[in-house]
Structures are given as C-alpha cells and as structure tokens.
Image 1 (cartoon, one colour):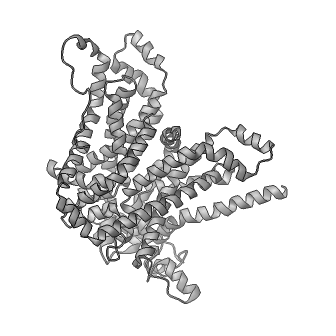
Image 2 (cartoon, chains in turn cyan, orange; image 1 turned 180 degrees about the vertical axis):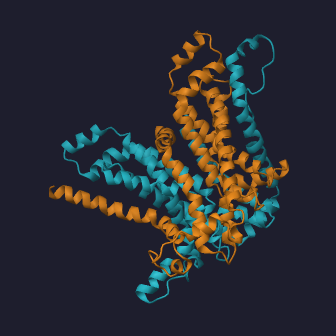
Image 3 (tube, chains in turn red, yellow; image 1 turned 90 degrees about the vertical axis):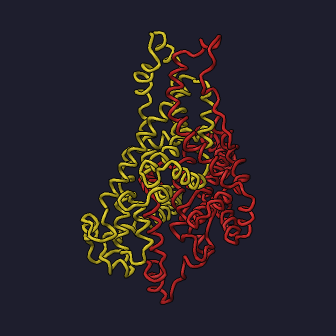
Length: 291
Length: 280
C-alpha cells in the first residue's frame, strides 16, 4: 500500500505509440493532473509517512501494554456492532415510514434531515448540556417530578458510551434513511399491487418483496457505515472527551490522544493495528462501487 | 374514513411523533438556550417566561472575551468553505471529464484509488495529515485546512460526477468531434452545461463538508484569529467558566448557514448524492 503506482501517468516513449497521444488523451491527462497532484501530495505521502512512523515493533508492544488501548478496541467494537446495527434497523423501518404518501410526512422528512445537514459541534454541545448532572434540563426535570437526583450521565463509562452511540445515531440516521428510501422507491410498485391482489399481509410484502430487493443495499450501507464510524471522532470526543478516566475512547479519539501526548508512533500504530479489519471492508466496498 | 384507514394513520403517527421529538430535541434545546436569559435556561424551564434576543446582541457585538473574534472566525469558516467548494469543483470536474468522457488511460485506476481514499475513515488520515502539513510547513496556515478538505471531498465528488457523466449519451461527444470541436470546447460548451445540476450538488457537498468540519480544523489551525467558528466553539467548551447561553447562541448561529444552504439546494443534493449509492 505504501508504493502506489500511478499507471500511464507518464508520457509514453516516442515511436510507434506516439500517435495514441491524441489531443483527447493529452487534455484528459491535463484535466486529471490536479487530482493526481492532490492524491500524491496529500494521500500517498501522508499514508507512506504514517506507515514509516509506525515501523518500530516497540510501538506495538507499548500499545498492547496500554490498558486504554484495549479498552478503546472493545469500545470501538461495541460501537460498531451495537451502534451501527441498531441504527441501520431503525433506518430500514423509517425508510418504510417516509415513503408513505402524506403531506405531513413530507414536512417531517424535511425536519428529519436537519441533524445531518448541521455541524456536529453545536448539537453535541446541546446534548452535553442537557445531560449535565447539576443544571442539565434532563436532571432538572427528573428532580422536579420525582424529587430524586438524576444519574451523572457522562460519568459512568458504559452509560457515556451508550449516549455517544445515541449521538452518533442522531447525527447519521437521516443519511442512511435517505439512502434506504431511495432503495425502496426503486422497487416497482406493480410488485406490491400484485401482492395486494393476492392478499399478502404487510409483513409478507416486506419479507418477499422489499427485503430481497434491498438486501444487498442494506448490507453495503451497513459495511460502509461501519468503516466511516471508525472515523467518527466527534461523537465521542465532543461528548465525553474520552472520559471518565479515558474509559470511553474509541480508536478515532485514541489516535488523537496519543498525538496530543506527543506519542505519534503509538498513534499510527493504533491505526495500523486496525487496518487488517478495515482493508477487507474497504476492498469489498470498492468492488461494489467501481463496477 | 373506515376503521382500517384510521388504524393505519394512528400507526403512522405512532412512528411520526417520536421521530419528530427525537430529531428536534437537541435543536430545540439549542434554540431554548439562545432565547433565554441565563437564569431561566439553567432553571430547567421548557419555555422562557421572557424570551429575549439579548444573547444574540452580545454575540454579534462580541461583548464577551470568548467572543472577541466572533466575526473574524465566522469569516474564516466562510472563506475556507467557499475555497474548498470551488477547488473541489475544479479538481473533480476535470478528473471526472477526463475519466468518463476522454477515457484517459489510467483513468479507471485513478478512480479506484480515489474511491479507496473515500473509504478510509477520516480520523485515520488525520494524524498522518497533521504530520505531513508540518513537513510542508503549512500548519497554522488556512491553506492546510483547505487542501486537506479538498483531499477529503474530491474522491466522492469525482465519483458522483463520473456516475452522472457516464449517463450522458456518447453520441454527443461523437457529434462534437465530427464538427471538429476540441476537447476543451466539448468540455465548456457541451459537458459543463449538461452537468450543472450535479456540479451544484458536488459544490454544495464540499462547501458543507468544510463548514461543518471539526477534527481537521481543530488539528491544523490553532491561533484565535485563524480558527473557524467550530473550533472556537470547542475551545469555548474546554474552559470551565464558559457562559452556556452564549455558547449555545453561537452554536445556533454557526448551524444556521449550512441548514439554509442545504434547504436551498435540496433538490440537487438528494438526487445527486443518493443516485450512485442505490445503483450498487
């Protein structure tokens, strides 16, 4: 991966093949050059440099000795396995809801997209203030109606991680719902009409028409969402900062934590350790999309 | 209305109402703080007794030491987002045209490499990108953030544009060639006009991505006069004595432009950005 060859980007040697460099090929190369430059300067070089920084076996020994690393791996797995699957199931259900033809559902869908369109930081801050144990609105309401103090939400690592997952779901649910809506709309309406004539229940329609046509899309979305969620820094960092006691870090925030502690080699090693899990998923996605 | 329709509507409402509450909860909370005097927002009220725009006045006139550079930081966010939008369009349109219409040799490989970048989690590239910008001497220079965001936005943009471009009939190019058009004329007179909706979608996508970015902005820029409004909000939070109502008001102001832009260009965005995904 560190040596990426740029095929055919060099002018071919003069001679019989020279004729192939028609103005079309020449202009093609000129127009492609800006992206090739961006790619070489800001992808190939950083990736190579990163791998070079992660070359010492000692970094990996340190990493494995760090209890925070192991905790982060478990948190990341929980985030991916629980968070993403809950999110995708909800997105699948909601895509069925939003394709219903009602004016009010159309208006609701306009609001529903907001979390995805607005930046993370203000809304995560809003969640964070809501959950403040002393002044947050949630505990204020709990106190007002029950007379008891509410929990210290973000001070319990399990609860805090669960809330980080909820924040992640809040933010990215609209995007995946939108994709699955598009998938549902691509199913020909006649299939459903024919099924209705045959007296199919809505579960049977889902089971035998919707699911078979959406299965591949659903799987693709789940995998893509898992890959991207590995890079979700905001939901954890802005909500908990990795605390309490560094127990809610995920790989994305751990890399930045090591960077802040001036341990760049550990930071890169943590990413390299995740690559064997990530690269097959990336390969799968590329296979799907480059067809 | 018979019993069956009533029950269907009830079921829909049973989903719709929780969805509405869930979606609007943090946003409503943000608005609530922004229009409440400090004491009432912290008292756990669901609507202030005396709604006020005082917080907005304080933010707009920079009357708090956290807000000293509010307008400058807003400007930074804007200029960076616009630069990323424009540069991404230039880079991605050229690449998509070269790959899809001119069939440049190696174009397919380049497309795959771009897709590969797209699928690498952004946080994984953040640390190497930060170190690299240090090597290039661009840290604390807004160009570092602009170029990093172009790098992140370009792959998907190229892919979306290539998908749209592949759908244009091949006869167009042949007709243009027949008439003796140069590749550049084909690009300018045929390709760009036909691709306008996708170009709008991609430009908006890159612009919003850059405006909303936190991680890269926070790593690459640090001086108060250079940072974006998002990073300023994060710094605000790190302080113990932050005035919540001003933080929330600033957050609301920061969230409004992308929401407005999204709604303004919604018809381009949804079609343009989801079309490719469904194909697979």
